[in-house]
Every structure is written in structure tokens, then in C-alpha cells.
Length: 347
Image: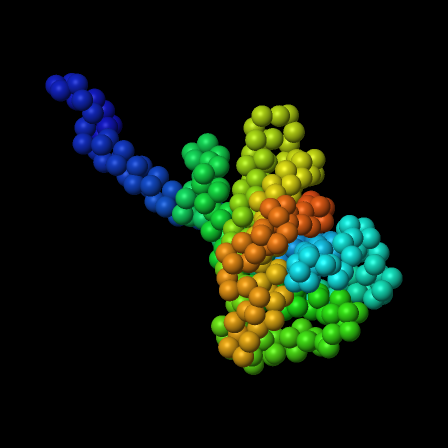
């Protein structure tokens, strides 16, 4: 007679049956606990995302930098005219004529004047903004159970990541703006203020100290917050909408459409703050590092509107948009393609 047979009296299985069942259950649980956890993909790590974003940003920056230089020159021309009591000393030119003028008057390679600090800036700025956004999206605000990321969460993440990134990158941005204006200063017969990126950095540090490196940082941070609200939030939201409401897959077509929307919204929201930022950064300072033309970003905003009108805040909008559109397109295509190549999940 088997030990696990049913008892004729109780109609139940004997204790040996229950012991065997317990042993089988224990063995099953032990096997499950010994199953290794899935290996974490290095390509999705934040440090890898940082590197990929910096590489993609510098590709986009190099290809579109002449438009940034043109935009900066246009914004400063209005300031020169305003300081001459309504009698412009520099003729207003459109984006194309300004670019051609730089080539004719200063040389073709001057279209990339200031590219070195621009690259330095993106090593800090682009890496921090993308990593911060992804960290907030994954670990702080988190996606919904269905994988969607609400627009209000995306907006908070975009503003926060842009502000944090720009604060740390502001010194490099200050050096870039000052170098961009050196060619124009020399053509006007003015003595050069800086000779190189390192000289500009040392000069700013010696005149204004550590605090001087963050001159214009407030409008700079404000601009970055608005730009990233337009760029990161719009790209993420537009991409989600396209993937969930159309038959398009996560492909180059989706990336192009999303980045096009992102560039337009970012330019619209960021241009006024960009004008203020550029003028504050370009103004001369006293021995204490205080501006000689504008006391603050609000003062610059008010004086710009009073002297040149409300639409002066959108001076350079066309080159800003024309630059942001291909910059955003180049960045997001490069970023998504590199992530796909190394096996990371899509943004």
C-alpha cells in the first residue's frame, strides 16, 4: 500500500502526500529566487545618455552655428541704433544680407567665430538638460501606467531641466556672445575686447570675479526655461501624439515631424528672452562688474520696448526660428539614431 493513498476512513490523503507537496513548492520557490535579474542595458544609463546628447548637440551646433552668429548680430544692431538717439549708425539688414555681409567684410570662416565656447557650452548644457529631463520623467514625476507622460508633467520637466542646465552653462554662453561680437567691433574701429575664448574667460573673471561669469544668467536661465518648455515638452508630447493617433511608427518621419513642431514653439517662446539675454551679456561693465547700459533684465526689457517698440523683442526671430528648426531636427535625428544604434530605448 502506498503511503500517499487515500485513507478509507477519512477519505483524505495521508501526511506523506502533504509533505511531498510542501517539498515541491519549496523547491519551486528556490528555483525562482535563483533566476538572475535581467541585465541592465548600459545604453539606457544616465551617463550614456549624457554622452549621446552631447555628441548629437555638437553635430547640430556645428551645422547651424552661422545662423546663431547672424541672429546675434541682428539683435545687437538695434541696440546700436537705439544708443545713437534714433539715428542708426549701422544699417539694418535682413538675415541673408547680414550673413553675406559677414562673409564679405570679415571672411567665410568668421561665420564660425565663437564656435569653441559654443561647443564647451553644449558639453554642459545639452548633457544636463536631457539627463535631467529623463531622470524627472523616469524617477520623480513618472509616466502613467499606460506609458504616457502628461503634458503638465512634461512642461515641469522641460522648464526645470532647461533652467538647471543653463545655469551651469551660463559662463560658456557669456564667452560665446562676446567673441561673436568681436568682428563687428573691429570693423567699427573699436579696440578688441577679447582675443580668444580663454582670454575672454580670464578677462571676465579678472573684472567681475566669479560673479561676473554669471552676468546675464537670469535672462539666460529664463530663456532656457522657455526654450526647453518649447523644445523638450513639444517634442515629447508631439511624438507621443503621433505614435498614438496615427499609423506612423517610431521612425525618422516621426522624429522630423516632432522636431519641426519643437523648433517652432521653442523659437516663439524663447526669442524675447534671447534678445534681452544677448544685450545684457554684450553690454560693457564697470570695475565692479555692473552693467553700464542696463541695470537688470527687466530694465533691458523696458528700455528695448520704449526705444524700439514691442516687436523689437522679436528682432532676429526669423534667424532664431530658421536656426532652431534645423538645429532641433539635426539634434533629435542624431540623438535618436545614436540611441538606436547602441541599443538604447527610444526617447
